Length: 275
Image (cartoon, rainbow, N blue to C red; front, side, top):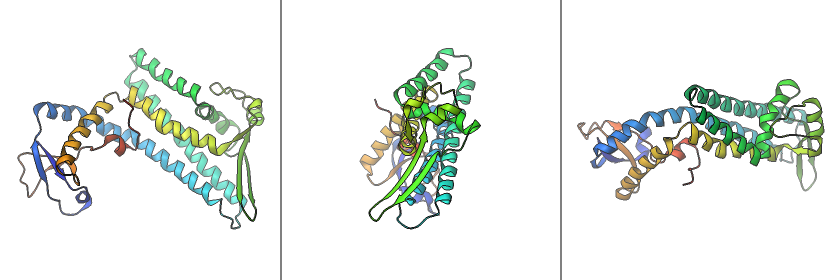
């Protein structure tokens, strides 16, 4: 197997692009590739949930931005659209966490230390981010009491458009008594929905994703480092090209290419893990 360079633009072309071989992969590199490839494949499949969640968030944010137009709008339809999109987002967030929690229990059912580690990290995130803790509790409201949007008001003046999206902390606590993580009380007053959702999403996409990396995908960081180092070697020789592996016995005219990650975290849509 050879370390090679290949034009990224050729990946979607009908005809293959030119392949530039750099060198043979070493025995150790081949062993690491065999070990990491299924890790990467599983991560691509599972972390697609984060990409889908981010798309749901962008849909919500885009609809919210559309309400800032000064043009006349049907406020009832606008509020209904916000409810639909926020429900989609919050149910997606719940499905994502349930997926990883269930898979984690299956993978580490006999390893109590790993189970404690995961729980500790999630608890710590809830302690440092009140919006994260709040939305873990908010599922009780969605299941038993009401929709995602509480109070909605849109005010248009000659110089501004103001959209108010709020919940009453007192009303939420009155009807749903159990808020074990966020400890919600009436003293929280009026809760602004938009910044709470924004913070929750940021914590899911960054902190929670890295909890999954640390506990569920411990081999993903060294895998990313392995492929990124080889990609840097390729780009040093061919700055405009991407790294691929090529079957060393195939003909150059009909290359058997193995497409491996050049920047794994970027390709998964995740921020790099701090060293």
